[in-house]
Image 1 (spheres, rainbow, N blue to C red):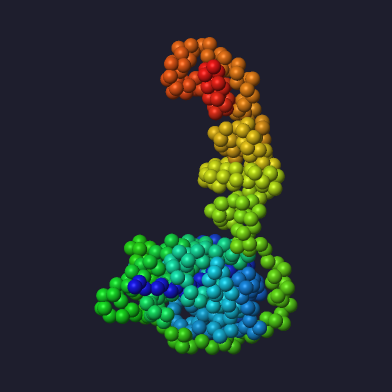
Image 2: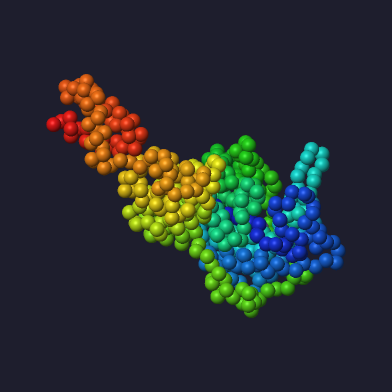
Length: 468
Ligand code: MN
């Protein structure tokens, strides 16, 4: 019997606010000069006092509400004590017993809690010395902890993706994993019974792919230990080495009591139910359409493929282009539109040009021409590229470039007559049974019409004529 994997995730996300969590230093992740967004409060000078950032609290409450979690009646901030150069006060202000949010569910995964804390400074280690940049010290940080209910690496990364989408939809965080704006830690254990095995916490997961790979790596490592009978799994914190694609032991896991948590006496308890800015009505009224709602609506209303709905949700510019064009079209063209956006336009946006050049009304016109058979798929692609580069009306571009297909039988008959007269040998060959000779004739037809004939129709008409 194989081991059953169990994963719980802890996700930290830097919140989008103008100022830091407890002072008015700027919260600017794009600042490249070190130690400029600092002040006596976030540098822990004696005698300074923290003040709670209302916007940061609101962000967490909205995330919690979007996940159907319970907003705490009373919440408080605690000191998490430990020494490290990146934490100037000697403690991190976090939340312990009374987090802002309890419970909730996202992407089928039950949430334990969501709380608010402050980020640490960032340190860089260079040979014999280390540098510390305090710009990030005190930036508001949301921490979401799931219940240990995740059963596969794919489910873990899918959860993280959905959370990233939600944070962006709510404007709570940019949540770029490569920039450290969203950081995932996985608590991993395996067991053959219902009792959970010893867990190992893996840190430094900077991409969705590393989340999956680190979990897979740990399952293999733990299975070897248990099956080999050599020793036991040690409860510890491990790091993920992106280059070696493996985890390594960092430190034996400390317990909560090691941090000597206690309520921060410098900050008031918040009775959230009595704060008018945080009422349930305000939290729900400002809620935008959530990713799972949008996903369901796009598939229901437009009958598009799930993978394309995902593209439109992840890239809202493409999503908006799709929807504002689709409303101008009839429902039998949605799939054509969906395909041209998710294949051709997705390809175009990697190069020069601008998506803003493509106006929904003009894109709708182009899709209609294509649906009606007035343009070949090659012609549509060319026009789309032209529109992406310079804007414009597909009708004008098609005329200029002679891209409209001639499907008019009378016009095509003139072309066919001409070819049959000028190529009697080929026609004779065809009539003798060399069926492939028709390709040459169709080729001539495309040439004479400058590529504007509809090849399928040419073939049909040639066959009709020569089989007489
Ligand atoms: Mn934390």
